[in-house]
Length: 278
Image (cartoon, rainbow, N blue to C red; front, top):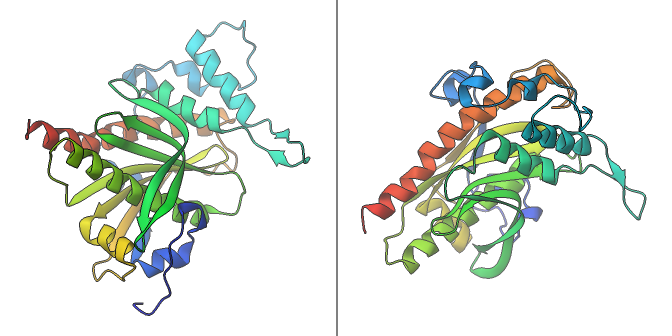
């Protein structure tokens, strides 16, 4: 694959050809292999309102539900009730909902903030004016990017949104190491970036291992000899819809809860390595 043509592209222009060009594969694994713990845990065990998983998304604001649950359900209803833009194009409003899911599940407990529509510089093929366009991200202002969420509003397909997500993880690796250098800390040779893709309101969860070798190959436009294997886990459900359906939503929220612990176990390595040098 060394003879594949590579060029400087922003993340939105990546497709499966770029993954092949940089020796990156995506492997689907079952939840019991992806998560170190059981996911079939009641939401109440994670401190969440069980009504989140049972209420209809069109619940009235004055219904007998908590304020936080009502907000979540309102964002969900907005995400599953598309509006039409000025060009009469059907546009689902899911940005706010994707952000709200992370907040509701508790990803922001700590010195973290959830941001929408961020652009991260991506150094690729010795060109420093490309970017990774991230739909939603979890960020620590000192350590950098902790989690990326990439959405597909075009319904092109899972492989396309995956291909756009992975350069985002590479850009996050570059950004996080730049921040370490600014603080007088050594760069890390590897970071596993927790990522999520969302097609409409159906999430899939990923662990993207970004190494110095992969990053150097992207920067120099070379084919890396070592393969990078990205693991992904989809919500195990036969339901065809998304989180507007309570039966699917309950399972998806359990996956989010499990992924929060798994993601934290990876991004804490950034913090621990920082603290060890203070």
